[in-house]
Length: 221
Image 1 (cartoon, rainbow, N blue to C red):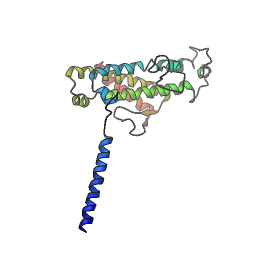
Image 2: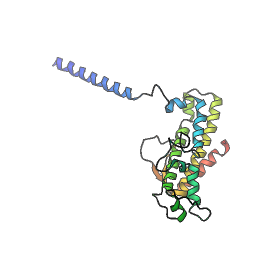
Image 3: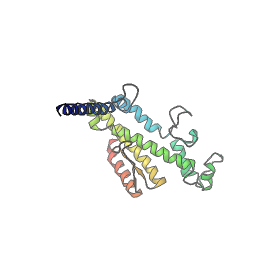
Image 4: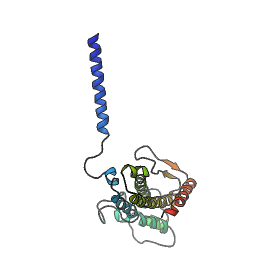
Protein backbone atom coordinates (compact mmCIF):
# COMPACT_ATOMS: atom_id res chain seq x y z
CA UNK A 1 0.00 0.00 0.00
CA UNK A 2 2.79 2.38 0.96
CA UNK A 3 4.74 1.57 -2.20
CA UNK A 4 1.62 2.18 -4.30
CA UNK A 5 1.08 5.56 -2.66
CA UNK A 6 4.68 6.61 -3.24
CA UNK A 7 4.50 5.41 -6.83
CA UNK A 8 1.27 7.36 -7.35
CA UNK A 9 2.80 10.58 -6.02
CA UNK A 10 5.84 10.02 -8.25
CA UNK A 11 3.65 9.70 -11.35
CA UNK A 12 1.58 12.74 -10.36
CA UNK A 13 4.70 14.85 -9.82
CA UNK A 14 6.15 13.74 -13.16
CA UNK A 15 2.94 14.56 -15.03
CA UNK A 16 2.69 17.96 -13.33
CA UNK A 17 6.29 18.74 -14.22
CA UNK A 18 5.68 17.64 -17.82
CA UNK A 19 2.64 19.85 -18.32
CA UNK A 20 4.26 22.77 -16.53
CA UNK A 21 7.26 22.46 -18.81
CA UNK A 22 5.06 22.21 -21.91
CA UNK A 23 3.00 25.26 -21.04
CA UNK A 24 6.12 27.25 -20.25
CA UNK A 25 7.72 26.22 -23.54
CA UNK A 26 4.68 27.49 -25.42
CA UNK A 27 4.88 30.91 -23.74
CA UNK A 28 7.96 32.13 -25.57
CA UNK A 29 8.91 34.88 -27.98
CA UNK A 30 11.18 34.28 -30.99
CA UNK A 31 14.84 34.79 -30.14
CA UNK A 32 15.78 36.05 -33.60
CA UNK A 33 14.26 37.93 -36.52
CA UNK A 34 11.53 40.52 -36.45
CA UNK A 35 8.33 39.99 -34.53
CA UNK A 36 5.69 42.30 -33.14
CA UNK A 37 7.23 42.75 -29.72
CA UNK A 38 10.76 43.29 -31.00
CA UNK A 39 9.54 45.97 -33.41
CA UNK A 40 7.56 47.90 -30.81
CA UNK A 41 10.22 47.68 -28.12
CA UNK A 42 12.14 50.43 -29.90
CA UNK A 43 10.39 53.82 -30.15
CA UNK A 44 12.47 54.61 -33.23
CA UNK A 45 10.58 51.91 -35.15
CA UNK A 46 7.17 53.51 -34.75
CA UNK A 47 7.68 56.03 -37.54
CA UNK A 48 8.52 53.19 -39.94
CA UNK A 49 5.34 51.30 -39.11
CA UNK A 50 3.31 54.50 -39.42
CA UNK A 51 4.85 54.99 -42.86
CA UNK A 52 3.48 51.57 -43.85
CA UNK A 53 0.00 52.66 -42.75
CA UNK A 54 0.15 55.70 -45.00
CA UNK A 55 1.79 53.72 -47.81
CA UNK A 56 -1.08 51.24 -47.66
CA UNK A 57 -3.22 53.86 -49.39
CA UNK A 58 -0.87 53.97 -52.35
CA UNK A 59 1.63 51.16 -52.79
CA UNK A 60 0.56 47.62 -53.66
CA UNK A 61 3.03 45.54 -51.67
CA UNK A 62 6.57 45.24 -50.39
CA UNK A 63 8.61 44.68 -53.53
CA UNK A 64 8.22 47.49 -55.99
CA UNK A 65 5.80 47.13 -58.91
CA UNK A 66 5.16 43.40 -58.47
CA UNK A 67 6.23 40.26 -56.67
CA UNK A 68 5.06 40.64 -53.07
CA UNK A 69 1.50 42.04 -53.06
CA UNK A 70 -0.45 42.87 -49.93
CA UNK A 71 -3.61 41.25 -51.32
CA UNK A 72 -4.38 38.65 -53.98
CA UNK A 73 -7.16 38.00 -56.47
CA UNK A 74 -6.38 40.95 -58.75
CA UNK A 75 -3.50 42.14 -60.90
CA UNK A 76 -1.12 43.82 -58.46
CA UNK A 77 -0.86 46.94 -60.59
CA UNK A 78 -4.61 47.45 -60.25
CA UNK A 79 -4.71 46.68 -56.53
CA UNK A 80 -3.59 50.00 -55.01
CA UNK A 81 -6.11 51.26 -52.46
CA UNK A 82 -6.79 54.66 -54.01
CA UNK A 83 -6.80 53.28 -57.55
CA UNK A 84 -9.42 50.65 -56.71
CA UNK A 85 -11.44 53.22 -54.77
CA UNK A 86 -11.38 55.66 -57.68
CA UNK A 87 -12.44 52.97 -60.16
CA UNK A 88 -15.39 51.94 -57.98
CA UNK A 89 -16.50 55.51 -57.35
CA UNK A 90 -16.08 56.93 -60.85
CA UNK A 91 -16.31 54.28 -63.58
CA UNK A 92 -19.95 53.29 -62.85
CA UNK A 93 -20.93 56.97 -63.33
CA UNK A 94 -21.00 59.12 -66.46
CA UNK A 95 -18.03 61.15 -65.20
CA UNK A 96 -15.37 58.75 -66.46
CA UNK A 97 -14.79 55.72 -68.64
CA UNK A 98 -11.83 53.40 -69.02
CA UNK A 99 -11.44 51.87 -72.48
CA UNK A 100 -9.32 48.95 -71.31
CA UNK A 101 -10.67 45.43 -71.45
CA UNK A 102 -8.94 44.17 -68.32
CA UNK A 103 -11.00 41.90 -66.02
CA UNK A 104 -13.52 43.92 -64.05
CA UNK A 105 -13.22 47.16 -66.04
CA UNK A 106 -16.03 46.55 -68.60
CA UNK A 107 -18.43 45.62 -65.78
CA UNK A 108 -17.74 48.90 -64.01
CA UNK A 109 -18.17 50.89 -67.22
CA UNK A 110 -21.51 49.26 -67.97
CA UNK A 111 -22.87 49.14 -64.43
CA UNK A 112 -23.03 45.33 -64.42
CA UNK A 113 -20.57 44.69 -61.59
CA UNK A 114 -21.52 42.45 -58.68
CA UNK A 115 -20.02 40.96 -55.52
CA UNK A 116 -17.70 38.71 -57.54
CA UNK A 117 -16.10 41.63 -59.39
CA UNK A 118 -12.34 41.65 -58.90
CA UNK A 119 -12.42 45.36 -58.08
CA UNK A 120 -15.20 45.01 -55.51
CA UNK A 121 -13.36 42.17 -53.82
CA UNK A 122 -10.02 44.01 -54.00
CA UNK A 123 -11.52 47.07 -52.31
CA UNK A 124 -12.98 44.93 -49.54
CA UNK A 125 -9.65 43.16 -49.03
CA UNK A 126 -7.75 46.46 -49.09
CA UNK A 127 -9.98 48.00 -46.43
CA UNK A 128 -9.79 44.99 -44.15
CA UNK A 129 -6.06 44.67 -44.63
CA UNK A 130 -5.54 48.31 -43.70
CA UNK A 131 -7.75 48.33 -40.60
CA UNK A 132 -5.98 45.48 -38.74
CA UNK A 133 -2.62 47.13 -39.46
CA UNK A 134 -3.90 50.30 -37.81
CA UNK A 135 -5.36 48.31 -34.93
CA UNK A 136 -2.05 46.64 -34.14
CA UNK A 137 -0.16 49.93 -34.29
CA UNK A 138 -2.68 51.61 -31.98
CA UNK A 139 -2.53 48.66 -29.57
CA UNK A 140 1.19 49.17 -29.09
CA UNK A 141 0.80 52.91 -28.56
CA UNK A 142 -0.87 52.38 -25.20
CA UNK A 143 0.54 54.05 -22.10
CA UNK A 144 0.80 50.65 -20.40
CA UNK A 145 3.07 49.31 -23.14
CA UNK A 146 5.22 52.43 -23.29
CA UNK A 147 5.61 52.52 -19.51
CA UNK A 148 6.51 48.83 -19.43
CA UNK A 149 9.26 49.41 -22.00
CA UNK A 150 10.56 52.54 -20.28
CA UNK A 151 10.01 54.98 -23.13
CA UNK A 152 11.05 58.57 -22.45
CA UNK A 153 8.43 61.29 -22.02
CA UNK A 154 9.47 62.79 -25.35
CA UNK A 155 9.03 59.47 -27.14
CA UNK A 156 5.65 58.95 -25.49
CA UNK A 157 4.44 62.35 -26.68
CA UNK A 158 5.58 61.64 -30.24
CA UNK A 159 4.00 58.19 -30.29
CA UNK A 160 0.70 59.58 -28.99
CA UNK A 161 0.62 61.85 -32.04
CA UNK A 162 1.37 58.86 -34.27
CA UNK A 163 -1.48 57.03 -32.56
CA UNK A 164 -3.89 59.84 -33.42
CA UNK A 165 -2.77 59.65 -37.05
CA UNK A 166 -3.36 55.90 -37.10
CA UNK A 167 -6.83 56.41 -35.62
CA UNK A 168 -7.58 58.85 -38.44
CA UNK A 169 -6.38 56.38 -41.07
CA UNK A 170 -8.51 53.65 -39.51
CA UNK A 171 -11.54 55.94 -39.46
CA UNK A 172 -10.93 56.75 -43.13
CA UNK A 173 -10.95 53.07 -44.07
CA UNK A 174 -14.06 52.46 -42.00
CA UNK A 175 -15.70 55.39 -43.83
CA UNK A 176 -14.92 53.72 -47.16
CA UNK A 177 -16.26 50.42 -45.78
CA UNK A 178 -19.46 52.12 -44.64
CA UNK A 179 -19.89 53.97 -47.93
CA UNK A 180 -19.27 50.99 -50.19
CA UNK A 181 -20.44 47.97 -48.19
CA UNK A 182 -22.84 49.18 -45.50
CA UNK A 183 -22.93 46.75 -42.57
CA UNK A 184 -19.41 45.37 -42.20
CA UNK A 185 -17.22 43.41 -39.76
CA UNK A 186 -15.99 45.63 -36.95
CA UNK A 187 -12.75 45.28 -35.00
CA UNK A 188 -10.63 47.68 -32.97
CA UNK A 189 -7.35 47.47 -31.09
CA UNK A 190 -9.23 45.72 -28.28
CA UNK A 191 -9.88 42.69 -30.51
CA UNK A 192 -6.80 40.50 -30.52
CA UNK A 193 -5.95 38.69 -33.77
CA UNK A 194 -7.38 35.19 -33.87
CA UNK A 195 -9.45 35.67 -30.70
CA UNK A 196 -12.72 35.11 -32.56
CA UNK A 197 -14.84 36.13 -35.51
CA UNK A 198 -15.59 39.86 -35.73
CA UNK A 199 -19.15 40.99 -35.21
CA UNK A 200 -21.02 42.94 -37.86
CA UNK A 201 -21.75 46.57 -37.15
CA UNK A 202 -24.76 48.41 -38.52
CA UNK A 203 -24.09 51.26 -40.90
CA UNK A 204 -25.61 53.92 -38.63
CA UNK A 205 -23.57 52.70 -35.66
CA UNK A 206 -20.42 52.72 -37.75
CA UNK A 207 -21.11 56.32 -38.73
CA UNK A 208 -21.37 57.24 -35.05
CA UNK A 209 -18.10 55.44 -34.32
CA UNK A 210 -16.27 57.25 -37.13
CA UNK A 211 -17.60 60.60 -35.97
CA UNK A 212 -16.61 59.90 -32.36
CA UNK A 213 -13.10 58.89 -33.41
CA UNK A 214 -12.56 62.01 -35.48
CA UNK A 215 -13.84 64.29 -32.74
CA UNK A 216 -11.64 62.53 -30.17
CA UNK A 217 -8.42 63.10 -32.13
CA UNK A 218 -9.24 66.55 -33.48
CA UNK A 219 -7.07 68.30 -30.91
CA UNK A 220 -4.22 65.78 -31.13
CA UNK A 221 -3.20 66.26 -34.75
